[in-house]
Image (tube, rainbow, N blue to C red; front, top):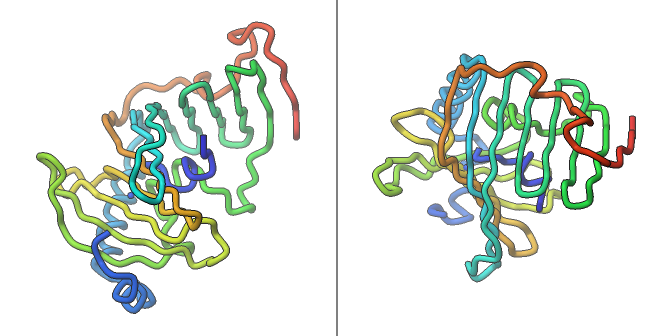
Length: 221
């Protein structure tokens, strides 16, 4: 699993040419910013969010390499991500990364000053400092009308060069994200369902060792 992509661009998101994108994105497209700001404001109004998603990996020719599904619950700065045989739990300060197949868990401290991208940032204002962006326009995806925004990282040392966000035009929420890696692979995340303002007890965002019999825990704090 490419965890760095899941937490860098979740869903939580190919039309314009590279030259057109570059010349427009240097100024940052004001229409794209209006859309992103609206999505961010709406997300911040929720007390909690639960979403299911599909994660797909393709090679440079578009051949599907793997497809998996996952779920995520977010509340304030807390989150719990379940993806295949992995869980990532964060209570806002501590992160537990659980590998079920290996029956191992690592504990680390969330460093807010490190610039780490959390799931919450993906739905809010992660784009303001880290990316240049331009609106590619509307397109139909099934029955939905989505607004596609193309982003390029300001830091050119990143191992991906382009991100496509698709925003549900009616719901004003993230629908999909597609990340193009420098090496050629493509990673996409599509939101299947989303529920907001649902009850989410704080205990959900804390690792309970008793629920993982025999698990080996490594504390890296």
